[in-house]
Image (cartoon, rainbow over all chains, first blue to last red; front, side, top):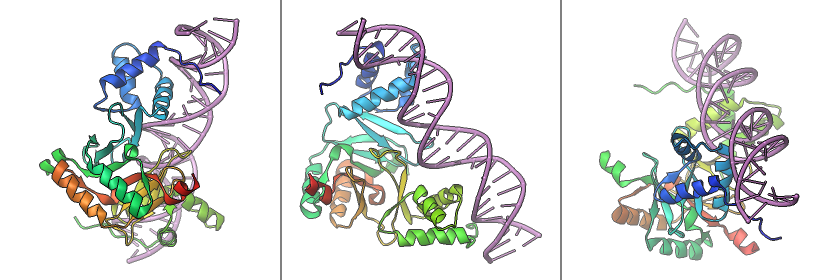
Length: 137
Length: 137
DNA sequence: CTAGTTGCAAAGAGTTTGCATGGCG
DNA sequence: CGCCATGCAAACTCTTTGCAACTAG
């Protein structure tokens, strides 16, 4: 039952590198695909999906989906250094940011005590309108 | 700029009826399709999607998507009588329940004051483990 | 009559899988 | 050399759209 060996291939390293460089941003399979394509370093979509899925399982990425955006698709975000944070999703611009705040702890304990619900902040997304989009209205 | 007339067709009424009867449960396009099919009262998928979309726009349904379930698809939930509630999604069993609690108000004001984020509870989903699934572990 | 609705089939988008090839260890 | 990874293309799933036929008002 030992874990399968992981081979350090060019593609895997490149994807890890891309994620490291874009840890502040949202990532989609297509963005990665296009990025490598424009660097004349094309990579197969299947490989991208396989790696993203793997990294999500390993807890290094969180996988999200927003509606209301044309061609909605899975969006991944690096969770390095932000484990335990929740996320804020703007319904207007689709921007996803980390909720780095102790308040999540009180939400956590409220849900547990009053609703017997074990919150997973990491996956939780608050929908609404972000600062910028509120201002523009 | 007047709204288009709404025609009371057999299919539309049937879908509304289905939703009314299933307001406690999650709804998917396929569930509706299968339900009508088994009643020897088949209905086109396109119609179902068109009606669900319309009802979502009217705020009578909320549209969700959960991962981790094979063939993840959009799941709708009746929001009649539960407008303004947030939702709790169980990652284990995929169950979606309403969060009927004043605590949402303090979350609301916190996000607004400290993060300048205008929460839309109606669309917000807390991920975690539900009462039942916690017990079973 | 006329505008909205339906159902089919085809198109689309995103994602997943089968399989032969290729490369790490 | 063996196992895993890759890339292509095909398959799949869910959803959306075009269009001709239909129907409520």
